[in-house]
Structures are given as C-alpha cells and as structure tokens.
Image (tube, rainbow, N blue to C red; front, side, top):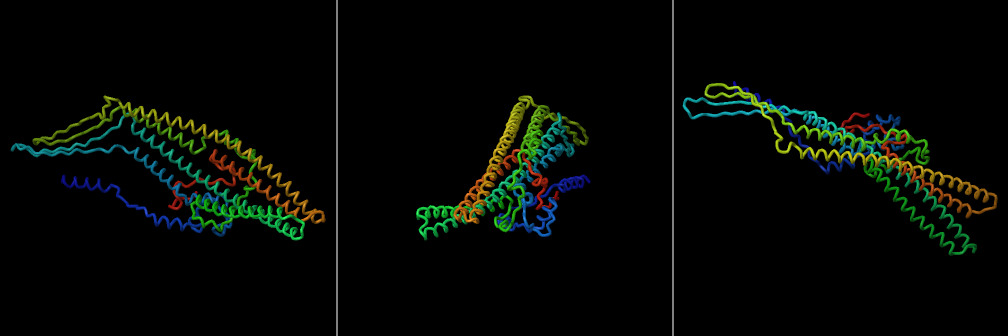
Length: 469
C-alpha cells in the first residue's frame, strides 16, 4: 500500500512538469520570409483597416500616408518583436516572484545489526516561512520591472514611428528636389539653345556660351545625383517600415501638410509643456527603474532577518514511533547582517535617481531647444516663400513683356531659372522645418498633428495573432 502511495505521489509530481519544446532558428527560412513580405498580405490589410477605418475598396490603397506607413511598420517591425519579448519575460518574472518556496521532504531508512532490532525508517517534510515581507518586496520589484519593460516597449514604438517619419519626409524631399533639378536642367538647356542660335548669327560670344554649357553639365550631374537620392531614400523608407526595397517602388504618397507646415502658435506645445515631460516613455521607464531599485533595497533590508523553516518528522525505531517538530532559522546574519548587498542596493538606487534627474533635465532641454529651432526654421521658410512669390511675379512680368514685344525668350528663361533657384531655397527651408518638426515631436514623444496621430501598438505582434486595436 505504501509503495502504491509513493508511486502515485511520484507520478503526480512528474505529470505537472513542463516539457521542453524545440524552436530552432532557421536563418534561410527567415530570409525568404522577409523577401516575401508585401503590401498584399490580407492580415496586413485587416490590421491597417481595423486601426484607421479605411474606406478603400482596393488593397493596397491608391496612395499611402504617414499614418498608414507607421501601422505597416508596427505590423512588420522586428524591433517591436524584441521589445514584446522583453515585456513578456518581465511579466513572467512577476509569476516567479509570486511563487512561494516549495516544501521539501527528507526520507531516511536504516537497519541495525542487532538481532532484536527492527527496520528503521523516517519521513520529514519541511516548510519555509519567509519573514519580514520578502515575498511582497520581490513581487513589488518584479511589477516595477514589468512596468519598466512596458515603457521600454512604448519607447521602442515611438522610436520606430520617428524613424519612419524621418525616412518618409526624406523621400518626399528627395522627390521634390529631383523635380526642381529636372526643371532646372530643362531651363538651362533652353538657354544653351538660345545662345547657340545667337552664336550662329554672330550675336553672342563663344565664351559666354561655354559658361552656360558648363552650367548645364553641372545641372545634369546634379540631376543624376538627385535621381540616385530618390532611389536611396525610397530604399531607406522601405527598410524603416520593414519591407524589401522594391515593394514601395510603385507606391504613390500623400502628405497633406508637407508643403504647409503648421504655425508654431497652432501646435499644442503649451499644453504639453504644462503637463511636463512625464508623458515621455523614457521618463516613465526611468521612474519604473527607480521603483524597482527601491524595492530591491527593501528586499535586501528584509534579508537581514532569517526565514523560519518548520520540519515536522515521523520516525519508526525499535518498533516505536516518534513524532517531532523541528524549527530552524536560516540564514543567521551574525557576521555581516547583509550589509554588503544593502550597500550595493543603496548605491544602485542613488544611481537610478541620478539618471532620472539627468534624463528629465535632458528632456526639458530638448523640448525648449526643439521649439526654438522650429520657430527659427519656420521664419526662414516664410521668408523663402515670400521670395518665391516675388520671383514668380517677375517671371510673369517677363512673359507679358515678351508677349508685348518688349522682351525675348532669354529674359523669360532667365526669370524661370531664378524661380527654380528660389524654389530650391524654399525647399531647403522646408527640409529644415520638417527636420525641426521631427525633433520637436521626438522631444515630446507624440505627434503634433491630429491627422498623424497613431493608435496604440498591440502588445502582441499582429503577425502572431494579436487582437487589433
């Protein structure tokens, strides 16, 4: 009977054990899966439509904006998968911290050579009772670490959105720059043709024609560089989104506020400033790290006090049974009273506190600097916009003069070239504005335009069956 009970107990303990499941990495298969990614994935369509409520009847949509691109990057991002895995591990740590210390079991058996003796046997379970709230402090630390991991996940999602925004606007700027350089080449080619005709009839010197030819050659070289920048920025955008570079080659883009940046006064900066910087994920993460460090210190302080180990026992010796209750205190902190680990925990808490203060000061400085930079860039863009307006008026005046017989093609072409030059200056100013806008959003870690607000990121990867928002 006793043997059956022992076997039943052993089988029950083994049946509850987790089993190993192999999950080997297969780099060739992962590489193929990456190159098979596309916008035609039905699961991607469902994920994007569930988050933005698109009314497109055809997928992929005819044009893609920053919000859609960001959602696509959330769907495919490997960096978010890493952050999700870190979060899952931290949340599993809470389960570990909540677990109580398992009991143990001592079993003994013996035989005395005395003929009058009997077979001796004994059994004694033991139970550990934690004191001074150690389990509660472990749980508190694990919960703070999980909160820190959650904020790390939020920080990773913002960094992904920021990189997608930067790559998106870099591509738009490169495409706009290519169009302007292409127009410049067209105008310079027309000017060269005018001077060639004048040279043929003796109305223009050859050195002047050579100067315009050199300018045309330089513009042609700039056009080739600009075409390469368009291809390069499109590949960088695809990489930021998590797609092969050729997937976006036929996509058209929409960016309603690209060429009309918002007035500094229209941005919700003051509201964010009043709220402080606690909405930033990295600041919240630093606060969670401090809470975890504080819990670690409290745990080390509690470890000065020994745990209580209760050991009830049963022994059968010499045909008599004995029942005992043993109690043990362990470990007894007689020599150092856990002072070393306590000192380390105190120092680590001070380090985390110093890091938080430094991060908070940095965040405040970034916000103020980014706001000043955006205002300055916006003023320069306004001046460039006024300049191009004046230059377009001059071009129209040159056209009217030619139509009235008071001007010629060269004057019109020269005015067109000056308009292109002014447009390039305005585009450079626009690039500064968009860069400053990105820096301002990064300082706040939130979009500043309602049209670009992105839903929260699923904590489980949508490619792995996560519920959509």
